[in-house]
Length: 403
Ligand code: OVM
Image (cartoon, rainbow, N blue to C red; front, side, top):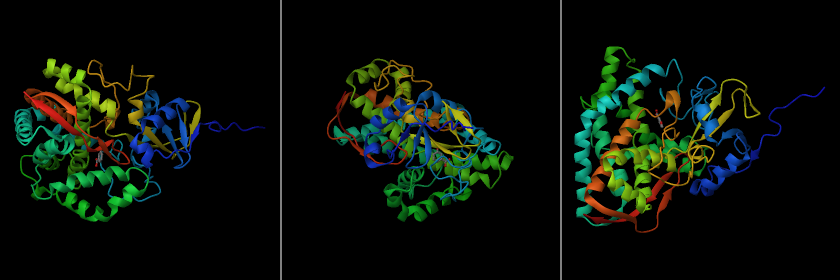
């Protein structure tokens, strides 16, 4: 009698997706992954990889089979102790996930943000004016993509001024830590205790201003919507996921516009509509969060491959967002396309709870730029910042012509 081994002929890749070459330019590997099949085994890490839109989307929307509670990085919480207490949102599934999600979703929802809108538009104009006053050539990463979120988001959460410079390095390490424990994780290790100490201390009720997102999370505990034990961890999610993601999303849209003159001109011709939708096309095109993992809760067959219970599966969001099986001319940044359905924010019950905040930041910044600037161009070597999860930037030198 013969036994059928459904995954005996699963395509296998020896490539390290987290090595410096692939992180530096992930596109060739992602194409190989998609073309090899719907499921590819990465023998280096003993994980299965999905690179096509269809399977990535299906896994994201099936949380019962592809759980998050065993961690959304390479490390499997069934066997390894997580480096920090798990997130109640990102690293949880129903039913535990639901109350924290419902609370945060309301605090960061479109209704709540209407109150911040006018002030953020003013803040963006003030920032752009300051930048233009000091010159017409600058680094779009530090001057705009980092400066704007750091100007508005920590205030909105309600954390004090002191120590805000810790937010980016904390996020950088957190997103590295979803990957394998390579040199990028080692680089961050010396500051983990200090940075975690600072972040955790700023989740406490008494350090938060009494009107921000943080205070509203604590007020939800007063109402009994979440427990007092849960409140600081929900605040921690905002400080963890709310800065590096938007910084890289904004850097992506600025780079895309500075390197595509025709798209910049489209934006100028129709700023009200496009200052909002440009961000989603940039999130599709660049996918600031490139990968997240899931863990199989049972044996499951995908595209003819058996994925055994307990396996880790890495979902290549950035690859799905450029899958030609789903998108026409996927490598083109094009404001005429409808980018909806992209998986840059994930999909399903875990889809980015902060996406309205991110879109508002982008809308404010791009509106201010379009109002003040005639043209924007790349003016020097663009450099990347390597990270195991984020498609991140070191520098985007730009030259602008003010109006
Ligand atoms: C969290 C968290 C951390 C990093 C990313 C994220 C993209 C969430 O602590 O909940 O979502």
